[in-house]
Length: 556
Image (cartoon, rainbow, N blue to C red; front, side, top):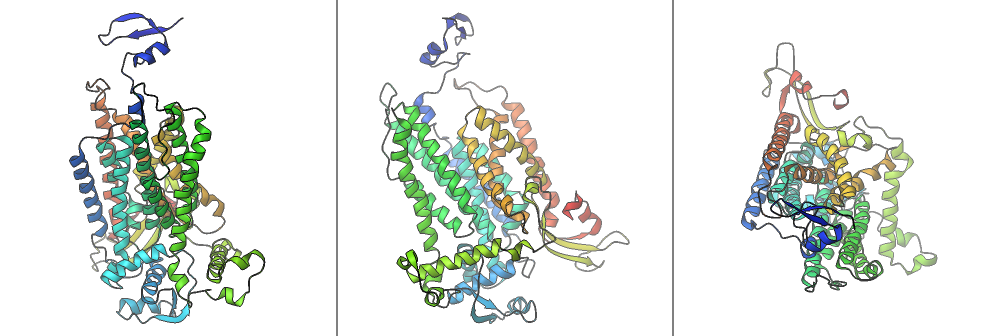
């Protein structure tokens, strides 16, 4: 049988071996050792346990310092904080959302900033998002009062914790503390994630719970495959592997997905897609073990329990997040069922839950009805432009600051301004777009499972918004995309960096060049973040300095 020349370890040629013979010998075409089935199922984790946590905590502390620095400023409600911070305090004080005074316009905001919290009407309020994110904001208000620091504390905390999760998740995916640290550092210095961690909006919580859910699924993949690897016989055939009906990490993932749904409904697409992906992981493991009828068995043994432990748990968790609404008869629309007797199959649904279903219908109509389709907004952004930051959003601006006031020292004939722009770090986002394209190729061509995670996460946080581009939508929704983007960037940088050692334990010669390229890119991203820092943090800038950071007309 014709074969190709195989090289033995000393580099000399020997007889022609077939591909089957090389695989039996555990060698590739160049004579390098192939990983065993056990190693493919569960590659060893890095041995630098302490070093891994030191790197993780150091970058997390850096991210936290950046996000908590001067968090109380500006001392006012920024953008939609005027809704969420007050809804959160209403939940904290009354258990359900109440309307607040708004005559004259902004009266409630002014009263709160002056220390007067008696701004709520007795009538309930229709809030157009679930309550988890607002309860999280309320936790900060309980700890630190109804102040800018109080309502921004939890976004800053969970924005920081997202960095920690990204580090540990990528470290587990790559078995590299360095690559995990790079991913976390890139997220720490992304402008959009930074800004969203410093304002009391819901999206940074959504990003956290989605990353937490995906992190649990990655942990489950390891947990499961390690047990399959332990079941291998000496001949490395475990037949079908272990029957693992109860998988704790998947149950925890279901809880996290439920909390993500309880923050914003857009999490449903991520849940659905990752549900399919984890089944593919299970089937791949079963097939690698060599069991017969792996697909059918995997559907029954893995697929059904996965649905119960992820999807069903998510639904139960989501329903539980409405406990406050269910317990308060004065909540908005809680009396719907009593005013509208049930008919048909709805008679079997308890009145409280029938009212809750109607509430959901009203919220959906608010987001998709003619009212909002006819609305316009100067910062509306088409999702097609999000990956390249085509249209960022300004959260706050004070224009025409006169020279000599509040630190304004502009060139002659110019004034100053201060802004908070929700804009991603451009170098990171543009490189991220390229990295995501590379990730698609590597996922398909090399069948590298790791690249599927950022691709699925990014696509499910992005593509569904195209169905709603006939209404105002905004770039800051893309904050859920950036954790998956930095995962893709880190994985591609890992390919550029190359392994520290070959399978035989010898040093990899390309490591030095790869390190220089990767290091230069990370430094460039950090410098880019430092350059846009003033427009992320409400710094007073001369008008020409602000314009120098507005690289495109669509950014103004």
